[in-house]
Length: 244
Image (cartoon, rainbow, N blue to C red; front, side, top):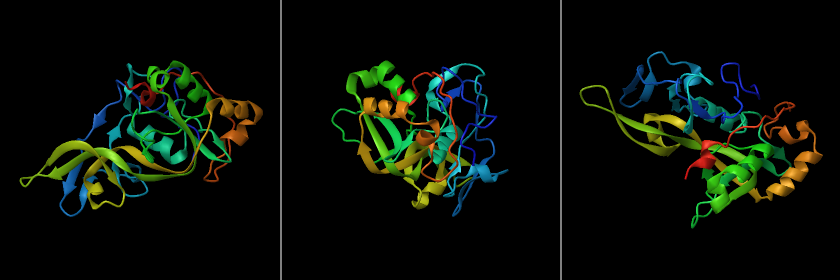
């Protein structure tokens, strides 16, 4: 599987790769449900479901068209960032060391770091930008960790149930684990990852390591894919970091 953004989803300088654009339209026009089976698309294809069978929301790919929506998360790009360990900001391979993949999340005062997340990983340059420019991180700080064993754990999305007279009724968005039988009634918008084998790290130390290693060493995937050289571009802080 490709380790870089595909032609229909290139990274755009100044805008997080997983952010949505105003001309990227969502569609549930062909969404249906069947009792005992769950949700489906009338014209469903292999890409509509993840490896665990969850059905994913459809949204067109038109990066750079219209206005960037920094608070929005594009389902396909968030899913790819999780599945392929791509940086949520620039869309290129996240940073990897012997301790694992780099993750950075704002601290929620009074709450411990969660073992699960909808935030994809990051690369060192994007993490440094977030620390310097994100008001929330400047105010509360951030968890910066290496993750040796990140695994898909479930999905976050809209729960539907079938009407007796036909059609579907949408409920509030919710989390469902992949093994939960009700996940078949969730239209997934974000993948949830369980982070195991976590080691807290210092971002300044990570930057020193970044400068001392080759691109191939710091982007080699834990999943054995071929390392690729990267050329980092300055980007805006991702929506995951800017929520107040």
